[in-house]
Length: 111
Length: 115
Image (tube, chains in turn brown, cyan):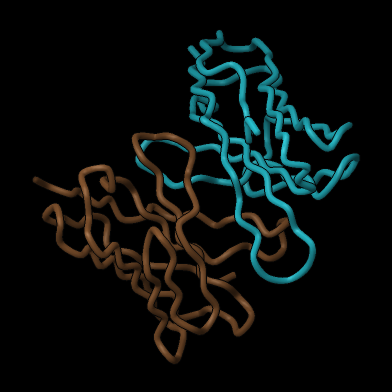
């Protein structure tokens, strides 16, 4: 199963773009990259997912490199409410498509 | 829709006691999961179910049991509670119909302390 590597923590000023990197060098061709976040120990919340192409929704953008070995989650205009732990995930294919959570990146958005 | 609901929100157990963590979803999802999260760590899969009557072990199943008699409910049973089971427990569900997208929806969690 593909594993991911993320920086343990990052800071971002409110109103600026937050760019969260993730390495997944062992990802296989049919594995998606998912991003979830967890605010204040609440249940994780889905943000976005992608396979090969860049993706955008109302919350964020996902940029995946052409070789698919890394990706970047972009929060275009970070707010204080975006302070959370962000998880880059490649699902565990042999366990009911469960999510394989690492430690994630703790993003602190400052005023 | 209420989504995924979990009860209780908090619980303190003594060593050796047993309890059941309840999880219910009203989205008609076929897949359901139990995860645990220790302080400062990511979530780890305990058990999962791909439909009523079908369950299987995840990464950390020891000390737990599950059942799935209905689509909506997926209770997690702790037998002979131990301090190592002190954690936050999250239930999740998703609808899976083949390869591709399957967003998981999470409940608010149950915070369990075993003393």
